[in-house]
Length: 371
Ligand SMILES: NC(=O)C1=CN([C@@H]2O[C@H](COP(=O)(O)OP(=O)(O)OC[C@H]3O[C@@H](n4cnc5c(N)ncnc54)[C@H](OP(=O)(O)O)[C@@H]3O)[C@@H](O)[C@H]2O)C=CC1
Ligand SMILES: N[C@@H](CC=O)C(=O)O
Image (cartoon, rainbow, N blue to C red; front, side, top):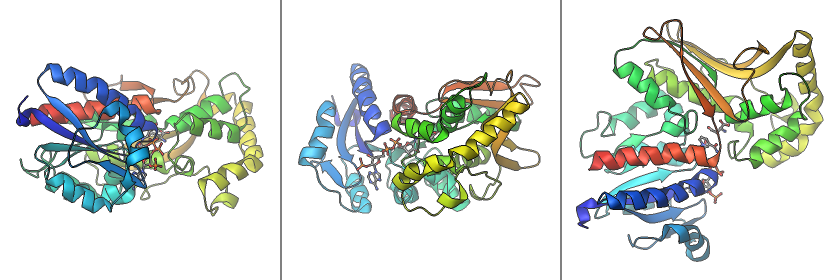
């Protein structure tokens, strides 16, 4: 196979999503090889370690073992980017971290011709300026053909086709008037299991621990419970819809972090102390039950008024949002074309495999663009 058919893949972050991605990459690699495209994994990195052997291809099934047993102390991330920029083939960087610093370097990475696929929301929901710089440095933005491509489907709704659908609605001339729904797999799981329709349910703090064990939460679950994760997703969707949202803290976001726990120093300490506040959540459940309702954590973007909001709302038991199961997200696009029957996307909104599917799908998009 000629060198021009070879694409290098560098994977940063090998937690829940990163591990699942490596499994899917192995499958995709075999498929692409039959189409005469060779995807070579050349670098794996986690927070403290990196494995890279001067662009020698790594056996994907052994990559994690290599990283942990033979990896070196991770050099500064900028150094890794400079090394990747000297690759003899096109490089796709897969950022499976939630690292802010890595996210902030996307414009530099893209301008060096390296493509990025990522579920990391930080870059796309930080300042509007960073958002603009990213797309000004991307070949699928205004950066020109020497720049890398960037795709981030899994930053909203995990593997659900939320971002691609919104883009297609807009690019085909539809007018989006409102986007609303449940945007967090963690929040969905918590409320569906702590406050199910029909009564019952577990203790709130115990469900938070379960959501973390199931790989639904952010690395620090406080980033889910304070509403910021949902606020980041709405910031991304609002920007795609053409709203100039400055940051995920520039609109009302309801936090579920008890006041007394706002200043605890770590996610672990937070989880340890959370059971002391289960009674507050029980009260919320009881007050909704008295009205024959359940509470769910939702978000909405109203395009004409540019109003974005994130927080708790009560729903009748018969409402589709009340009837969600597990980590399901439900996202409704109200548009001129779809009229009074919104376009609705529903399904698992968190978890390693489903999130990695969005990342792998994005990788495939870049591979097709590069060829
Ligand atoms: N889990 C989910 O359902 C979803 C997750 N996402 C997003 O996917 C991303 C990954 O999530 P998830 O896999 O659950 O998180 P994990 O905490 O399981 O994994 C994070 C990985 O990133 C690595 N990492 C952290 N900082 C750095 C750094 N500076 N340099 C290199 N590696 C680093 C960690 O290293 P180490 O192994 O050393 O700790 C770990 O391997 C996040 O941005 C998240 O928001 C998006 C949609 C759904
Ligand atoms: N923590 C997030 C993961 C996906 O974005 C969630 O629970 O939705």
